[in-house]
Image 1: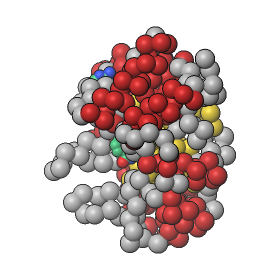
Image 2: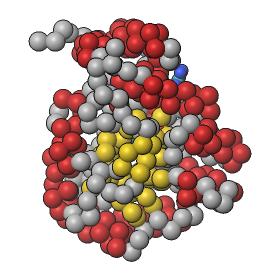
Image 3: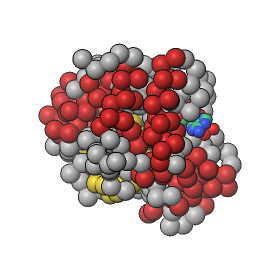
Length: 302
Ligand code: NAP
């Protein structure tokens, strides 16, 4: 049955000594306010082996206010439970400052890193990411900002999100601190990184790929169009054969790729966070894997 090599449960981020789980848990949809409820979610993740948590300074922003509130809630959770911080690899992001467009200028990013540290109540961010490319900032300037933060111990490592492969190449070439990760939107319904050079570049540069919206924002749980329905059918074949949920199959489909994407689980339900770890049990044949790809592309392989 097995054809493709399954991923390991744990791995290093790029060439660093930072060890993380093969799946991450994301805070985009986390509701600030209830520390006990958020502790239950965090422990559901930890109990199932997920210790890599992804947040951002902008999470909680609702178009008017709320900037920083999800990081703040994460900080309250960490403060409520001594010892928790050291069990989690914390990834966050900065560089979007609404209503201003993207800003990666040194002054803004320096201040954004400090503000994230304050809200989280920690001394060092394990993985700090530039949230979106600001094409008005020279990559040298981003690199110098990152180098200063790294030298001061404010960040352990850095990554990017939503960068093109050309933007990644430019920034990686400018920085003396190794770029360790890239975070594109990636799912069985958003395949571009597998075909536009991003995953090839990640494998060449040893970048971890953190896949955002790995269930296409829930579309792979509850499809609403013909394409998503066809992809779900191909995932269901494997899920029912192997006794896992379709969503676990969807996450594992990504993880079977040789670039070894780390899906960022978006659910804010303990049972679904727990269930996501079943992705590590799924085994893919080439035939089954390509069947999902063909369904997503809506045309046969050439
Ligand atoms: P996702 O896993 O694609 O979607 C999560 C949504 O699917 C939730 O609303 C969840 O609802 C629903 N869902 C999951 N399983 C389900 C099931 N079995 N049945 C029905 N609904 C189900 O991920 P995402 O939340 O869009 O994104 C994941 C993470 O990626 C974020 O938390 C964030 O860390 C990151 N992200 C990054 C960027 C960026 O620009 N870098 C952008 C977006 C997201 P429940 O909560 O009710 O389970």
